[in-house]
Length: 450
Image (tube, rainbow, N blue to C red; front, side, top):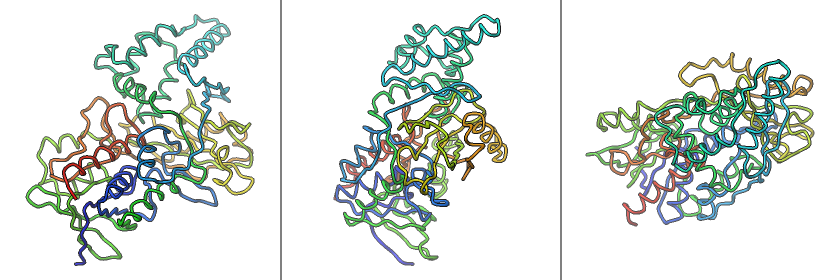
C-alpha cells in the first residue's frame, strides 16, 4: 500500500476543515486535506446548472466573525458584497415588504405585527391580540443578557407568556428556522437568547459575487502554498487508531488504498461518521451516548430561475425574512448582488425553508409542492416567468435542542471534530464551523510541536 506522512490529516473540505487546514499550514504544519467529492466547500460551495451558480447551502456569510478573521490571518482572499438591507415579508399572499432599521429591527417588526393584527381584527370585528412590544423586548433583552430566567421551556412557550399574537409567533418562528434550523416549538428559549446575543457581535452579512466555492478555493491556495496538499475525490475509509491514539487515515485515491501517517487527525465529516471511521470499540459508552443525541436536520433549499426579478424588484442588496408561509422562511435575490451568478438577462432567487418538524421524515415531493405554492403566493412573477431549477433537502448534523454539546476533542488522543455537529451554544452556520476550526487548530498547535 502506498504510504505518505503529514503532520495533520483532515477529512472533509467544509468550512471547518478548510479553515483548520489553512490555519495549521500557515503556522508551519504539513497538512493533507482530503475531500470525497470533486468540489471544495461542502455546504458552503457552488454548483453550476444551466449557467446558474447555485449555493450548496450557505449563501450569506457573516462579516466580522471567525471565518473572516481566519481569512485575514492566513492571507486568503475573501470576496464578498455587503448586504446592507434586511426586509420582512408578512402574510401568506403577496406579503408586503418592510425594510428593517439597522438597529432596533425586532421591536420595529413587532410594532408592524401589532399594527397588522389591529387592522385585521378591526376588519373582522374581533378583539385584537396586541403585542406588548415594550414588555416583550425588555424581557427578550434580559434573556439575551442572560438575566431572564427562561427555565427549561421552548421559546414558543416562553413567548406565549407575554403574547398570543399569531403573527408575532410566526415571525419569531421564521427567525428561529433561519438561524437554528429548528422551530420555536422545538428549540429552547435559552438557546434562542444565546444565538441572538452572538448575532449581535457580527458586523454584517455578505454574498460572494462569483459563488462561495471561490472563497473556499482561496483557503486551498493557502494550504498548497505552505507545502500542504488537497486531494479531491478521495474518500476516507478508516481512521487508524492504536492504543487510544489517532495515527493516521486510510484513504481511497485513484481506486487504491493509501495510508496516511499523521500526528493528528481532524474530521469535518460529522461526529457520527468520525466514530464509524475510527471504530466504535475505541470509544467509551458515555461518548457514544452523546453522539446518539445528534440529529440529521434537513433544510429545504430552492433555487429559482426567472426572466424578471421575483423579490426586491428594485435591485436592493438585501434578503427577505418570509413570515407565515407553508415552508419558506427566507429569500435572497442573488442576481441583485452579481449578474454573473446567472446567464445574461436571467435572474436567480435562492430560498430556504423548513419542514414542520425535524422529528418527522421528509417527503421531497411534498416539500416541492408546498414550496411551489409559497413561491406562487409570494412572488406573482414566478407563475409567468419563473421555474424551479433545483429543490433539495440538505441535511446537517446538529445537537438536539437543549442537549449537551459534543466536545471538539474526542476520547481518542489527537482526534478532533470540527463543523456543525460540535457547534457551541449560541453559534450557528459557517461562523460556528470556523469557530470550531480555530479552537481545534489552536489545540493542535499547543499539543504538537514542530
